[in-house]
Amino acid sequence: MSISERLRTMEAIWDSLLYDDANMPSPAWHGSILAERKKKIDDGSATFLSIEEVKERHQ
Picture 1 (tube, helix red, strand yellow):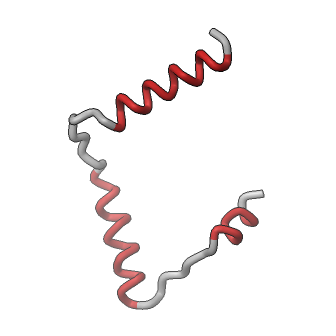
Picture 2 (cartoon, helix red, strand yellow):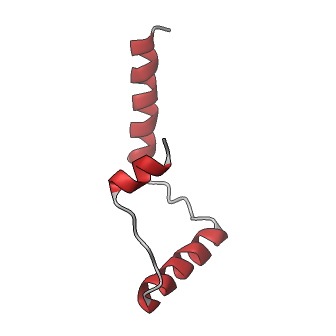
Picture 3 (tube, one colour):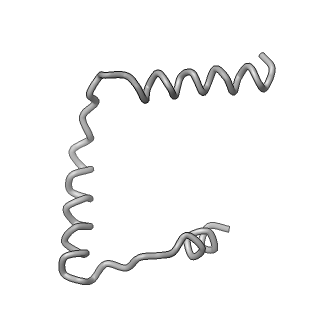
């Protein structure tokens, strides 16, 4: 397959997943992580980074 054919195939797969009505449950640990993050936001201990800071950290 050419690169363009592979990209079209990948796009078709992503589209089929995006619009699929199957409801896939989140893993159990996901709820714990979200609750922990919400608690930090609520108690004021959360820190946030700008997009620029994130990009800089991951160079």
